[in-house]
Length: 197
Image 1 (cartoon, rainbow, N blue to C red):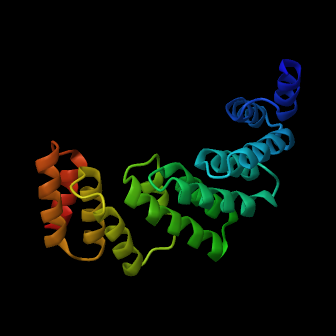
Image 2: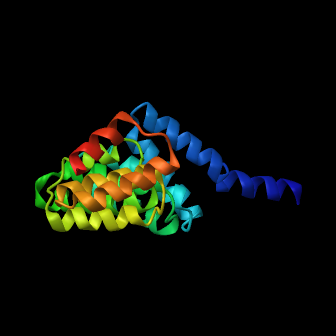
């Protein structure tokens, strides 16, 4: 029985965490084809694991042109499975910027709007938001997303910035006043308060 059990374990390959680590290593050294094969195995073994789909998405992202749409699908699955994790949304944005065109811009913008509701200060997402098409409607959507973060000072500051863009200085100043009550004012806070007035 012991020999049979060992043979079955060997046939199944390494446990998923070792497979993930190996796929990550292969991806890091640029062996995308082998990483893809392992990442697919990880997803097969753990189809409801957001990290597995995120890994497969990153591998697809590094493939030649054909991989970007598959990467997007995997990042979307990962985001559905882990709605509080900002990373899959950030990588959806990266896919959008890679694809360019109107579709790419929409993909990037939609991912950023969802990301702001999860984490208002994730990596360079706020700076990247300035690279997508913007309009008063989009500023309102971004403000609504940031409002889900409640009294988070960064979210309040960003909401104030959007309110200034919308020409609502009074609302911007009241948001900044709440932000200052949560943390010490910064040079940016003072600048925004000047703009708001």
